[in-house]
Image 1 (cartoon, one colour):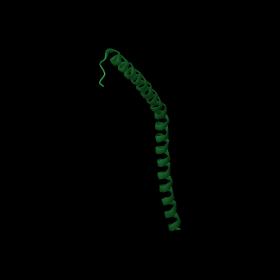
Image 2 (spheres, rainbow, N blue to C red; image 1 turned 30 degrees about the vertical axis):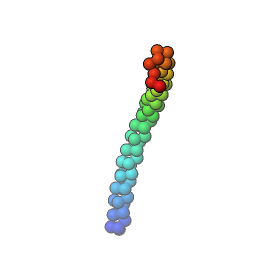
Image 3 (cartoon, rainbow, N blue to C red; image 1 turned 90 degrees about the horizontal axis):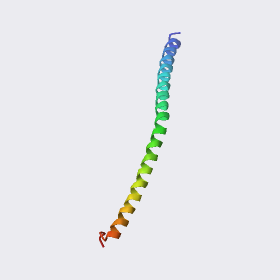
Image 4 (cartoon, helix red, strand yellow; image 1 turned 135 degrees about the vertical axis):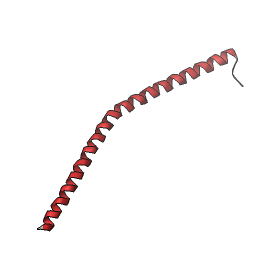
Length: 72
């Protein structure tokens, strides 16, 4: 009978640990759900800025060519 009682205690400890792990995973899942849209926004902003910089670079090259300021 003591063996069964001991196993029950161990099972209860394992179940308690598993519940704690499940709760921690739920928090991580919630954090990831919150971060995904924010990362998407940052990616879009980066792409937009990169495109604008590329266009500005082309415009500057064009201006330099017209003014004869470009290196050979």
